[in-house]
Length: 311
Image 1 (cartoon, one colour):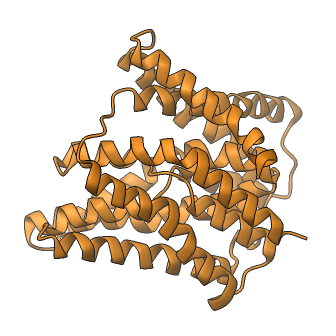
Image 2 (cartoon, helix red, strand yellow; image 1 turned 180 degrees about the vertical axis):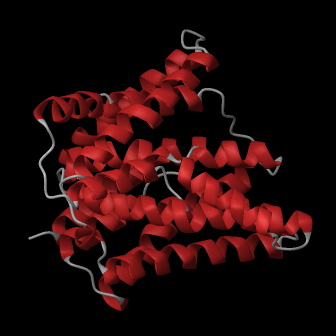
């Protein structure tokens, strides 16, 4: 446990540096947005393309892995949504809260953190988790929020969802990488060097951007944010563990990566969705801030546990 904590501390220290830079005004919101865009469109995309170019679609399509993660995440999504509805919140707010409880920061935090702690081979399993989050649950929240406001599911909503997926650089990078892999050709040395150099910027850039973005978040509405943080940090990995270890048994290393990915704090892009739709942005902001702060302990604990599962 202590050894894992020492390994994770540098990652959270970079988040802390970013937070300090943003909080003091040394790093402006404009600079944070620019860094986030660089990481999102270039650094992480290069990492994902380079790794997926060495895989085949068959390497990623593990039926039990997909079912276990999908079932565990859906269970948490439903639980959090039902709790919101019992508190007499509307469908839109319930969907936003469910997203907080079930979707973690897999792209910016999970990919670099787990690759460093659990090996580069974890990236492939993380890509599956990321793809399910983006294709299934990020689409679901758009459908639920927009549909609840319009009172029906129109073709325009489905077009919006489709365009969002096509424009997402992480999805595009994975698809293009798998397409390259299907040719059975190695990446040309100059291209591989370029992707490796860009991908190396993903870890410090993403972590610093997370910290800087947290500087603008507030910890208001503590009670609800505390519940959502508990759902994300404790309930989500617990449900995924039950699904992956007992219902649809997954190979130990893959299960360990999946559970660790499920333990990550609330994803930052949920705040952008909440702001865009004008649905509970303060609640989401507090959930991101609280869950990220607590994840120093909870993520370390989960990783220390799951690593004992791997022979």
